[in-house]
Length: 221
Image 1 (cartoon, one colour):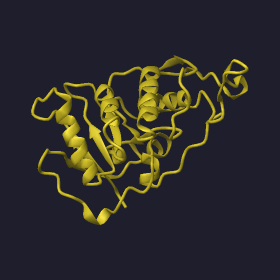
Image 2 (cartoon, rainbow, N blue to C red; image 1 turned 60 degrees about the vertical axis):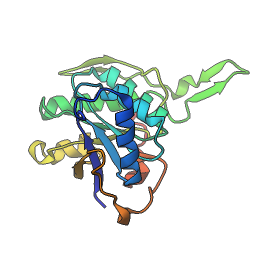
Image 3 (cartoon, rainbow, N blue to C red; image 1 turned 180 degrees about the horizontal axis):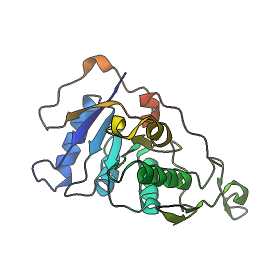
Image 4 (cartoon, one colour; image 1 turned 30 degrees about the vertical axis):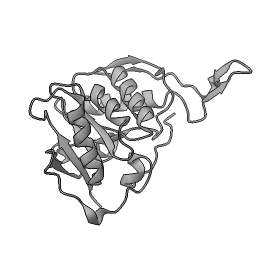
C-alpha cells in the first residue's frame, strides 16, 4: 500500500498550537500514515514534538531546510524518542544530488553513534553507556565537516524514516542511498474537510517504520 501523508502548510496564518492539535487529531482518526509539516512560519521541529504528546499512532514528518547536519540529526533523534518511534524527515533536495547525498549520509552516521545496546544506565556501577558500543563519526567531505558522536542514544526506529519528493529528477542511485520512501501520496490537510479512509484499517504497528512496512536499519560501522 502506498504511504499516505497529509501535507500541513501554514493553516491560514495560524500560530496557535491548538489549531495544529485539531488537525493532528483529525488526521489520526482518518488513519493517515503521517502528518507532513512544511517549513513555513513555525518551525516544524518545534511544533512536531508538541504534537507527539497528544497523538498515539500517526507519523510526524518534518520538512526542513537550512539546518546543519549535527543539529538536524539531534533534533530528529529527539523527536523519535519523544514520539515513541514516529519521526520522519522530508529531505531538501534543492542543493542537488551530491550535496544532499552527503548530508543524508552524515546524519545517518550520527544516528549510529551509539549501538542499540550501548546505553546501560547502570547506576550501581556508575556506567551510563558501554564505551565499546560507541563510535565517533568524524566526517570531512567535499561539502560538510562534522565531528561526532551525537550526544543522544540511537533513535527507537534506528533512523527516522526519510522521505523524498521528485526522485525521478535525481535518479535511482540517489534514491537507493539516501531515502526510505520515494513514492507516496499526499493530501492537503484542511481542518473539517479531511475524509475518512475507512478501508485502510488500523495502524499496523507502534512505529512509523512498522506502519509503512519498512525494516529497521542496522548500525552502520
